[in-house]
Image (cartoon, rainbow, N blue to C red; front, side):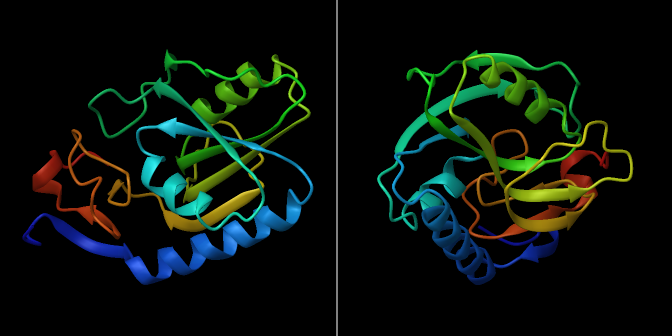
Length: 183
């Protein structure tokens, strides 16, 4: 893949892998003696979650949800739709929601309320990227955070634009002409 699509690499592969290993070790320590259920939010969190769970040393189960709040845009619509629900019952379980990026907080807040109603023993959030938004709409408590990033539209390491760029081993910003210039 040529590199004429990106403006700046924000996080290189080596830094991502080192931080994911640290997060896995911390999660392992925090969930010692437990059997947590990691809930990956499709599709963006798949790459991050796959790497993360390989660094978790306690028994862990996986499930997935698919939600939509972006469509094909670079900004959230503010309307969250559940496209795929959990296969596992989470009542009485220790649940770790694994998400790619926290930006407005709307999607994560919706998910936490939705999942809390199912009475898990615990419900925590692990995000790869936390965007530093001046206008974050909802503050969401995040237990594990990979990186703080500026309020820029990013792709790579699972994040996409129009289903492209998820396979990049790094996180970068796109050139405005690639995505139409909207942030």
